[in-house]
Amino acid sequence: MLTTFQNLKLKPGEPLSALREEAARRMNVSPSALVHFRILKQSLDARKKQDIHFCFSVEADTLPHAPPVFDYPRKESDFRPVVVGFGPAGIFCALALSKAGLRPVVLERGACVEERTAAVQTFWKEGRLDPDTNVQFGEGGAGTFSDGKLTTQINSPLCREVLHEFVQAGAPEEILWLAKPHLGTDKLSGIVRTLREKILSLGGEVLFRTPLTDFRFEGSRLSGVYAGDRLIPTDRAVLACGHSARDLYGLLAERGLPLVGKAFSVGLRVEHPQKLIDRAQYGPMAGHPALPPADYKLVHHGRRSVYTFCMCPGGRVVASSSAPGEVVTNGMSRYDRAEENANSALLVGVDAKDFGPSPLDGVRFQQRLERAAFEAGGGNYCAPAQRLGDFLKGGLSSGFSAVRPTYRPGVVPFRLDKLFPEEIALSLKEGIPALDRKLRGFALPDAVLTGVETRSSAPVRLLRGEDLQCPGFSGLYPCGEGCGYAGGIMSAAADGLRVARQILQEL
Image (cartoon, rainbow, N blue to C red):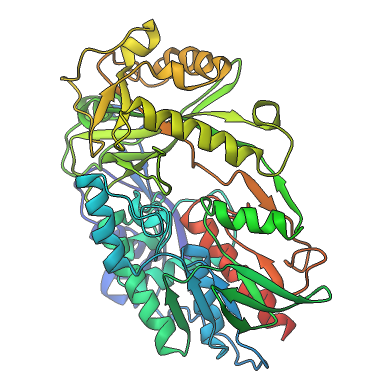
């Protein structure tokens, strides 16, 4: 009989085989009698620094259990569906549609991940930006150049399907049970390429460097989309654009689609020595080889909420611009998270009171901050930066030494409070000491702040109804983070599957 065991504990360094032995002991059988044994979840409990341990949930049985299969019944349609965007939402939507035999056509404005990686490296080294292929645009979406976090706050059975597809595409099997799984940018690029090849093998088509330029409607029904001058007849299009598709947002507003502004967050990237974070979280256990680089998630509710987001242990701050004359930061880690610094976004929420009521006012607010950062960095995609202690005191930093900035092409000392409206700057200055009381060392004077972080989520939402279609525009399916329905790799991928299933149900 299948039996589940909760809260099994292992100290750092104890072998995983001890879990199987403990499950067998509780079932009064020998470990070899367990034909089926699976770890369901692994988390780290570091609340008591003298008793840090891993917690596991496992299932075991003396009978075999087949692994899950995620297939879709074959469907037929007069037209091939079109998927706009090839980030997590677009990839998993196209994959599900391909499994059902619908041979979707994917439009992606950026390049394939191989060419994209080369373009991004050129930008980081030389400051030469490709506006169509960069950290934001191209195969895999913005998540390809990130920490590759697979955590999410949504509780959807579709997340299990996403994780299994990642494993089949080459991800380590541990992502199926880790409480905080991640892939790192180095593994993500290969996984994304494998998923693309699977879609192609099932009859799908991916058109790189091919942006959506317009729609064709017959009455209120979609009848085609334009890629440049090319018309692609279709009665179903999934808009799985990312959160930086500003030209597409402009097209949606111009065509009168129900686009609304939404709240988002802006701020800075903060870098600390990873060893400092390890000591703060693990105490005397810091440095134990069985413990992963420590992370954190902090929030302070004051004049405005200030919080950390997308924390990257053992990573770097990266240049994430997608348009000329703008500087944007983000965080990135490799799978091993072995670099010297930890970094995180340090954000403050903003809404219509800050930027205005029109649908695209949030986009313009982002652009103003990013252009100001570009000018503050010297106009060559270097970023403005400041020691955290100088930021709190309102002084200009003379240099950086104890914590070396990782942003490339480079940083320029600048008073970062001058980039933001006063309310945002004051909220950050109030929040940092409060976060230090929750994580000792967070307000390290030599920590480095780099600006600006503006792309934590989409500044707009394209409305959709219960049938997941855009009201008044039949056949158009807003999807994923760019349309305001996800936040991160997992939730975007799950939303792509959800939209695909809706289309298949209609057929």
